[in-house]
Length: 282
Image 1 (cartoon, helix red, strand yellow):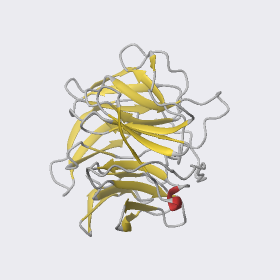
Image 2 (spheres, rainbow, N blue to C red):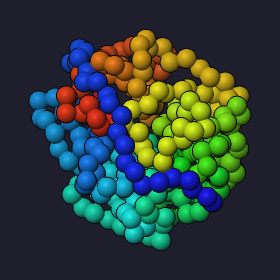
Image 3 (cartoon, rainbow, N blue to C red):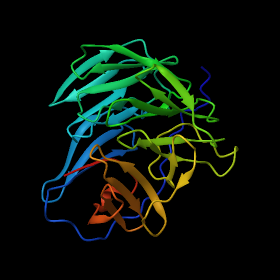
Image 4 (cartoon, rainbow, N blue to C red):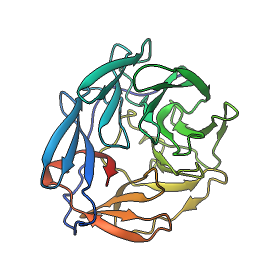
């Protein structure tokens, strides 16, 4: 597996959000901040910031859907989980120092999936129960559907997008995608995927998880591009385990229900303007 990525970190600008905040539930917004230490941090209105993990400068990281755990691959090739202040090494002998090879969490925040070559593995957050999910050429920026059946990722050459079926252990290339530089999220049933498509083959980047991106929503069976029903210049989007969608744009974070209807808007802290939004709970 040839991974054409470098080690340069970059962060795109995300404009601070100024929108109404829902009162029904206390939201937690989880970010990754690009600095020398690399921090996964959470923000709660009225509570402020808390640090979930310091993952190091190479961002091979993932935040759990519950907003309380983080997983990352060290430059030495260890997959580490931090939960409740405890660090646990759950896998070793992985490819460290490669930005695109990020792990991903299951919807219940109890398992982490990762790659060894073209083999996709999963392990419990406590380091037990490691097992093979299948094989795929799509190993970069893995995303896991909430029903547990599918994982999606793109190739190290950024020239293909694949969906792995854990029931069969086999992966299929998603049609119509010539170039792809990020996989953010799969819908709960794996039928849709949120990706980033570069403007041209010369804009492939280094495989680093983006702070902001123009989300493209695709049907994983047909490759057809689908619309995201939020107006404005979008700078991110992802599905939550319940099927709702978080959409980030200039000036707002919008939560859509399963039917694509807006249910609330959230205000982001100004300090998050250069950070990648990983999870929204509540």
